[in-house]
Length: 273
Image (cartoon, rainbow, N blue to C red; front, top):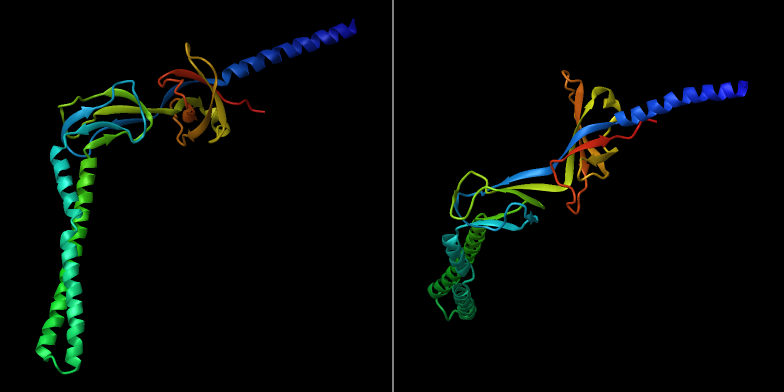
């Protein structure tokens, strides 16, 4: 009888502890929101008229992919003209041939001048002609270099009329269409959803235990559901005195884009041991 009383007492003591543990585990889940890692409003560095917009809302894009272009007929013609000038070789070859001839002539006349057969005035004229041919060639090479730089500049100007995606992501919104004038407004709104950010607000009593690098479990709301791991990336250093809370951002991989952004979720942090 005494043994049964002791066993019953142990059960009565243990059962509330189990309930308290369950409540503590439940209290370790906090409301959060799954958001895109980055949202980009994509525009153009130069004003102009849109010629093409190659993507629609919901399309996935890769970093560097052309998503829109501006009208660029004049710029293309300018680039081709600059390329033609940069590739011109005839003038350089002619100046090089003239310099080579002047050098040979100087060498021949120098021997005659040493033998005192050729007067100094003619020798001086030949040397001057050689020096002028050398400077003429140098000027031609410098002009060719300037033409090459002008071509590079025209290529860069043309590239600025091509709008490329800066991220791997999805098109959230298409804001302009071909034929519209663009100056300082966005053409597309893109969102990077791999990885995803998870934003959660926690009570101040958890502040000492939440550290950058720790892992937590994210449970998206129905109908998505499931459990996913995320890593703490940011712990706010400023506490909201009015609510007694602080913000935490976690980063959650989403390599196959299974999870959409904008979902509510629960975030479960590891229990204290």
